[in-house]
Length: 125
View 1 (cartoon, rainbow, N blue to C red):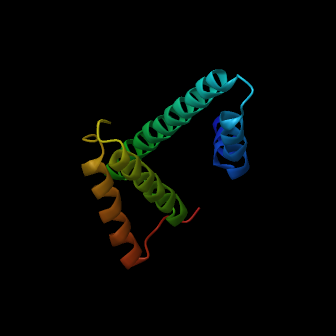
View 2: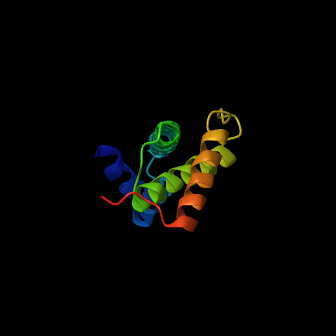
View 3: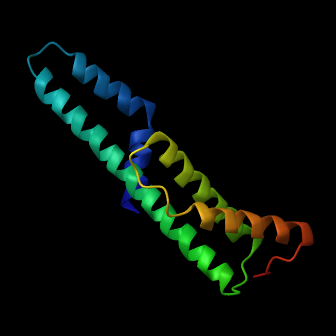
């Protein structure tokens, strides 16, 4: 998946160190390099937002499936809880991002997970 590759590159400390080196160079290309750096940061932000939107889609779909009686494995619940965390972290760091969509759905997933965990009634795959 291309976004995974992009994220791996952005997460690399060496990559950002190289960008910083380019920004501080004194060869007259500082403005071009600063513009590239700005564009990279903007791209990184868009990738993060797209991940949050995808997590929101997963959360809403999973909550609907639970409501419709679809059984899921423990691993699948844990993946959905991870999506809930990803979405919540993004919303906390981006106050202008609409966050009213998943509050009830996230609670529904968490409550159902807790009940199934206590009873040990996850669907086996």
